Every structure is written in C-alpha cells, then in structure tokens.
Image (cartoon, rainbow, N blue to C red; front, side):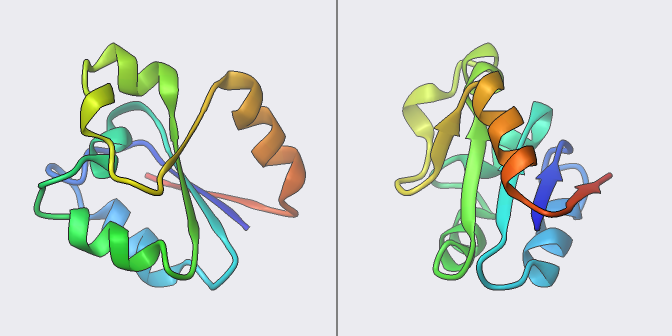
Length: 99
C-alpha cells in the first residue's frame, strides 16, 4: 500500500498515525507540508528513521525545494518528482491518503 501524508507533522499527528498503521513493505510518500516530516533534527525524525526499518519513505522533491529544505532531508528518504509520484501510485495496489 502507498500512504500519502500532506500535513505538517508539527501541526497535526497524521504522520505519526500513518507510521503506526503502515505495514511492513508499505511505502509512505510525504507531499505538500508533509515533507517537513522528512527533515533531520526534528521532533519526528527519530520516529521516521525507525519507521524506515520496515517501510520505504519518499518525499516529493518539488515540495522539498519549494520550502527550501533540500539540504536537511534525512538519510534514507528517497526523493521523487511528479513522474515518480505517478509511478508509486501505479506500483501499489491501493493508496491511503492521511488527512
């Protein structure tokens, strides 16, 4: 399953909820303000790093760049462009949007 998170982890708990429910082998794609969950040195970076042991975490590169945080992305997070976003949707049998 592909999980998408578009809310900042500093305003809502959607990322934490997503990570708790994502099953091993799932993918999590951070988009819009959700990309703040991909940053090093934050209150959620430890949880994201721990989750990456069982799920693959992606972040939408245009959203990372739009927020000027491209030099702060956690090691292991895979950056994708819009075409990569489409590929992730087609590669997974279901998509869950966390609002």
